[in-house]
Length: 424
Image 1 (cartoon, rainbow, N blue to C red):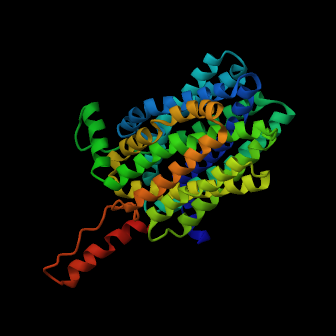
Image 2: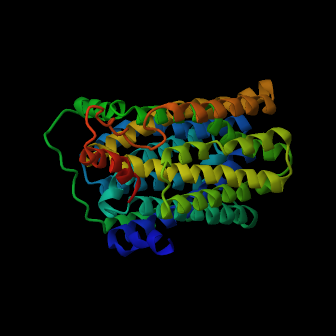
Image 3: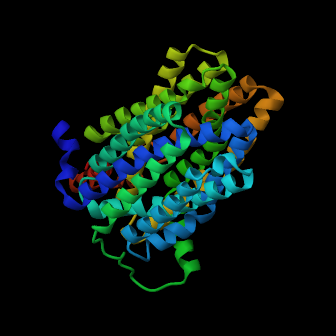
C-alpha cells in the first residue's frame, strides 16, 4: 500500500510539479491565517465575509474561461500565468492592503480568485499527462501533501502572527509562489490535441454537454452548489467568528491544521485502496461535516471541536480524491479542462453569496439558527444523490445485460466495465 502511493514520484514531471505545489500550499496556509487575522484586526466580521466572497466570486466568473484556455494552450504555462498574478496580489497584502481601504483588500482578493480560476482546471487536467495509469495514487499524493502543507502553513502563519505579524507571512507566501513558477517552467507538456478548430462558444457548449450527458456528474455538481452555499461557506466563515466570539481566535490556525490533517488521512486511505463504490464513500464522507456543525451549535470545548474539524477534513479528503479520479478517467482529455471548469462554475457559483450572507444571517438570526439550517441541508444533499444511477460508482452505469440471451461472453464484457473504472 505504501509503495503504491509513492509510485507517481518515480515520474520526473509529476515529481517536479508535486514539489512546487507542496511549497506553494505551505504559503497558501500561511496566507489564509494571515488574511483572516489582518482583516479582523481593523475590519468587522461582515467585512471578512465580503473579502472572502470577492475571492470566490472572481473564481466563479473566470472558471469557464480558465477551462477553455486549459483545452487550448499548454496547461503548465497557464498555471505559471496564474501564479504570477497571485504572487502580485499577495505582494499587495504584504504592503498593507488588508489594513487599508476595504475596496483595495476586496480587489486583491478578487485577483487571487481570478488566478485560482485559471489555475485549477489546468492543474487537474494536466495530471493524466503527468501520471498516466496512476490517477488514484497521484490524486491521493497531491491531496495528502497539500493537506500536510496546510497543517504546516497555518501553524507557521499563527507563529508568525505572534512573532512578527501578518506581513511576514504574506512575504513568505510570495516566495512560495515563486518556487511554484520555477518548478512549472521545467514541465514540457504538449498542447491539448483538438480534433477540429471550433469557436469559443462551441467549446463551452461541448463542456456543458459532456457534463449533462453524464447525469451522475451533473448531480454531484448540483450537490456541490447547494452544499457550498448552505453548509461549507457558513462553516468556513463562521468558524473564525465563532472562535473570536469565545475569545479563542488563537486556536484558528490549529483548526485549519486539523482539517488539513483529516483531509490528508482520507485522501491517502482511498488512494492506497480505492473502494469498490467510490461514489458512496465520497458522498457519505461529506456528511461527516455534520459533527462539526453540532459542535459549533452547542459550543463544544476546543478538543471536541478540533476532533469534529478533523472529521470534516477526512470527508473532504475522501470525496476529493475519488471525485477527481473519476472525472479524469471518464472524460476525454480534449474536454477535461472544460469539464473541470464547468464543475468549478457549478459548484462554486453561489459560494460568494454564502460567504457574504452567512455572517449577516448569524447577526440577524443567531449563529445556532444558521448552523441548524446548514445541518438539515447537509443531511438532505448527502442522502438524495445516492439514488441517482452512476453516483454510487462515480461512473456511467453499465448497460443492462440482454434478457433474451444468456451468452457468458456478453456478461463478462459488461460486468467488469464498472470495475475497470474503479481500479487504477
